[in-house]
Image 1: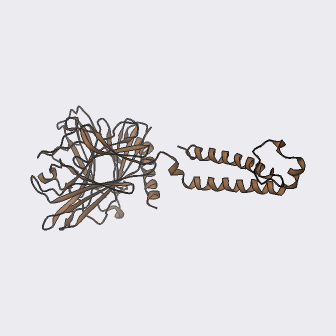
Image 2: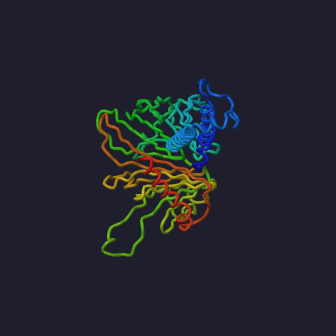
Image 3: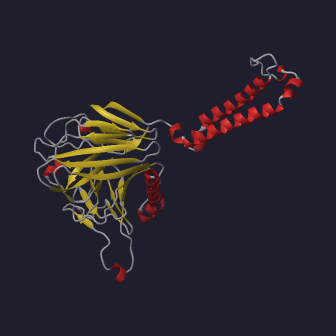
Length: 404
């Protein structure tokens, strides 16, 4: 929305106030000697010409004062322009069978976070649009049980991936509001098979636009250190594609003797599968509800020095960023981003660095999200350069502005 549209109510009020100020000034100067009450008549004939001529300086003074007031109000309206849009809302709701969920909205986008399980950010999308995340319909409304349930949406895991990664987080979480941020704090994972981790997801939506900051926290309550890395996974809806930048290319030379990046492959990673699009500058993975390759699943990990990944679907572009720790060691042979797909969905994942997490310590991993609409479809590196990269660059600028 443009600044003028956003300020329309304030400008209309100022215009009316200015008109009232002129009338008020006329009513004041029309008071005749011996009568200290203001005239209620506003026509030009309320006073004689002589009476109006006696106080011309007073007329000018009153009008100047009201003009000053109007300009002052306009100045403060410009300063407060974010507040003149749709206000931020935090609402407890029932959602798809769960009785305790929280909707966060700024009028442009909304998020829905489950508190009966998880935590899970189960919905992220435009306020009157569809969910960008995939939801598992057969798991909707479920709670309890000793088996892991994905539920869909965005979740927090622990890497490297082992059996303990699949802890069944099927119990309620505690919700704490701190200003414009909601914290979703799970209990310590003690049963059925204890990991002694406590997970937390904090969600902060910007007052305007689509920017979301998601803070992931994992605290070790075990006796002794555990090697781990935070792992943030977003399950995206069907029929889109993930996009990642590859290292810049340059001719062989003494300045380019060492490798610039890496790709990690799983036993079911098959680069001949037509879902992969390996370009010169970008790697893409298509989500296909009916794959025809040897394996229904595909996965790859990479060291993404630019710290961003994206998902394009139905003219919408979801972008996530995570800071790159160039001095740190990442899991899975050094991957800070990964992507996985099967017939139902695709996951866009970022990882924090590996560390020995000692008793009582907390590992923190931060993602930043944006959502764009009306993005033209296309193919190959040229399409990414023309339609995707400018929006990714915009997120860097937006994030820098938000941090100031």
